[in-house]
Image 1 (spheres, rainbow, N blue to C red):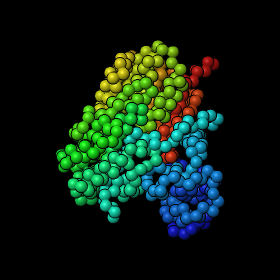
Image 2: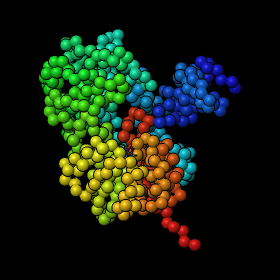
Image 3: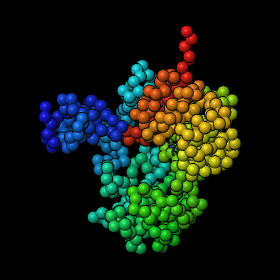
Image 4: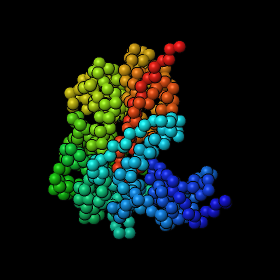
Length: 456
Ligand SMILES: C[S@@+](CC[C@H](N)C(=O)[O-])C[C@H]1O[C@@H](n2cnc3c(N)ncnc32)[C@H](O)[C@@H]1O
C-alpha cells in the first residue's frame, strides 16, 4: 500500500516503547503513536513518514485498553515530562519488565532469560527530589514550567504530581518577587533578561530545601527581599544563585554564589549521608535508589574479603553502599568534580576502605590490572545511557572477573553489552527497578557470573 502523509489510517497498537509511544503497523510499515496503548485500535493521522517507520497523531481511540486511566494532570498532553500518565501504574510496571525482556531477547539474542517483575513504588507520586523550571514569558505574563516535548516552549506548570508540592509555593514567591521588582525572565533568542531557571532540590528524608535561582549576570537585584520571603517557608536550608552567562541550553553554569545557608542540603540513601550542592549529581529518587543498590548488593553475595571495582561510580554512592560488606572498593569516574564529591562523601560517612580514581573506566581499569596487579573479585558497572565502551568490554573478556553486577538505565545498550559478555558469562538474574514512575524509563540490575571452563 502506498502511504500518504496527512492521510488517516486505522492502526492496531501491538506494543509500546520506552518513550511511552504505542507501536503499530500499517501493513508492514511501523508507526509510533504517542498517547496510544498496547492492545488499542486507534485512528491516526500519519504526520511523518521516514524510510522504515513513521509517526501518527492520535485522533480517536476506537478500542480502548483496560490499562487506560484518565491522566490526573491537566497538562499531560502538552508537557514533555511524564509519558505514561494515561496508563495504570500496575500496567506501567508490567510494560517496563517487558521492555527489558524484549531488549535482552531482540538485541542481546538471548532466550529463556527470566526477568523478574519490576519493583515499583508504593506511592509513585512526589518522588522527585529535583525540579528544574525554565522561566519565560507567555501571553499571561511570567511563566514557570516544563518544556513541551522536543521544544523549548514552556508549558506553565507550578504543581506537578511527581515533584514535591512545596515547589508550587516556591514558584509563587519567585513570581511575586519578579513582578514586584520588574525582573525579566531570560530570553533565549535575544540573550537578554535575568532569571533563566529555578532549580530546587529537596531532601526526601531530611526535608531540607535548596532553592537555586539560575541567572544571567553577576547579581540578582533585591535578592534580600526574595531570601526573606523564601525563608518564611519551613525547611528552607539554603538559597543560591547560579550564574550562567552562556548562550546555551545547558541549565547550570559553573559559578555559584550563596545567598543564604551553607550552599548544600543533606539527604540519605539508606544509612549513608550525602551533602548535595547545586552542581553535584544525586539520584533523583532516593527511595528507589536504595532498593536498586540493595538489589545490586544482594546479587553480589559478598563474603567480606573481596576487592571490588565500581566503574562509572559518579559521586561514589554504590562504592560507599557496598564498602562495609567487602575488603576494598575502587571507584572509577571520568568527572573530577564527582570524584571530589565521592572522596568527601566517604569522609562524611567515615568510610576508609574506598579509593576513587578520576579517568575513563576503559583506560583506568586496564591500568589497574596491568600496572597495579589489582584483580577484582567483582566488577560493578553503572554506565551512562550509551552503555560501556567496547574497550572496557573487551578487557573484561580477557581478565574475566568472577562476577559482574551491571546497573543500567538503558535496556537497549544493556542488551548490546550483555551480548558481548554472553560468551564468557551466564546471565543469572535480571531485576528491573522503577526509579522514574510515570515515564517509560527503567533501571535494571543484572548479575553475570563467569562461565565454568569446559574440560574436555
Ligand atoms: C549512570 S551514572 C552512575 C553514577 C553512580 N554509579 C550512581 O549510582 O549515582 C554514570 C556515570 O558514569 C560517568 N562516566 C561516563 N563515561 C565514563 C567513562 N568513560 N569512564 C568513567 N566514568 C564515566 C558519568 O560521569 C556518570 O557519573
